Image (tube, rainbow, N blue to C red):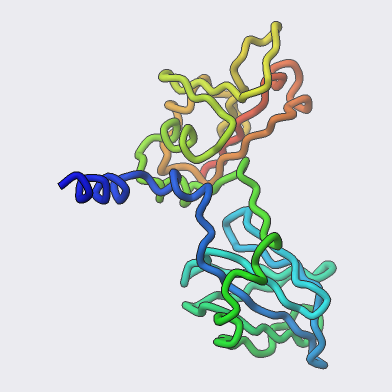
Length: 222
């Protein structure tokens, strides 16, 4: 009975509790040019801060890619989007100026597991999309931020303090901006209206009010 209770408790915990240490499902791929040689390209996941770079052979690795995700490839000044479309690996061929030629699954890459992915993926934990926060299972922005963004303290009234920062002149709380307009609390913002949340630890661009950092929230309508 105790074992069944622990299993049920694990599945009831919010997504974000595990998201910080997840990244267990590898997604390997390659990007090649018209002549078949590898290209050094920046590959990011659209709508997130997850990205990586392909090596000189065009090989890249990511983790926990959703079937409906879209990869954004950037090479010099050109960009192209490639839907994952349920693939678990991907070979991408580019025909000049980021015109996508052929895209196919690569079962041979899947067998490589996480070996190639290791140490090649980057995630900015200080900026999260609203979709990610809503998938956490919480219905309030303050609760989602408290769990999903490390290094912040969210008070019961929705005010935010960033660990390691503090100013005598402006108190201890971060400046909260919603579409560049100041609000006093995260509780004033509906989680379902949020496009993204960014923690800016160096808020000097915002004057003395940004001395304790800035929580910048962007709405879905902007």
